[in-house]
Length: 260
Image (cartoon, one colour):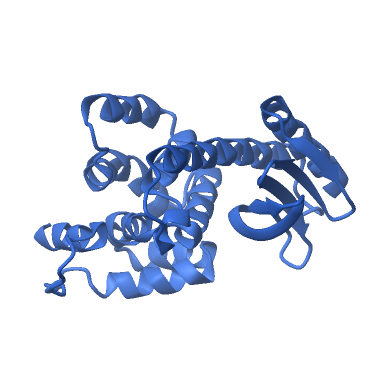
């Protein structure tokens, strides 16, 4: 089944990337699509039963660095072509969103910082919208009506009411599993803004003990720990540290959370 799954993922990504001028290289352990200094790599981690999508930097067609963009559990003994197609579709969406972010960075020529290479909140929001299509028109309206996308406001007032029941009930199971996977991937690669939205805006709103345990058992260990620590802040008044720089999104998010 692994070979069939690889073929399905390969076909979907080829449709997207070959047209964009990427060259495909297939070896025993992975598939790599490369173009100039950029590449996407798909591998299967046998020890974890995970398909993994990486964004890579190249030099002379050799990978010099890589960052994981998405991981999806795939059990060769039980999963079918349906799960493989879901993974392929998510990888396509992930690459499209990552390409938009990379393009925006190049156009703006921002001063580099540690967070510049991390996923922005719009990446997270777009991936959630692919699980809940009813969000797509609202995302377009937000983009159209506001010069700067209101990530916290949009996440709290628009997204949270839609996803909260799924997170609390763990049902439908497919959407619950996809949400937890997206949260785990986005938390791992996300900047502070993205991490705050996941932990404080979304997960802190799930108060039922069994529901939180169900989420913790499904997300990555990294997010499980962050989720626990963030919940300790719920309802507490925290004085942001005084700094000379303008306030960051994370401090704004903490302040907003205290007022509710």
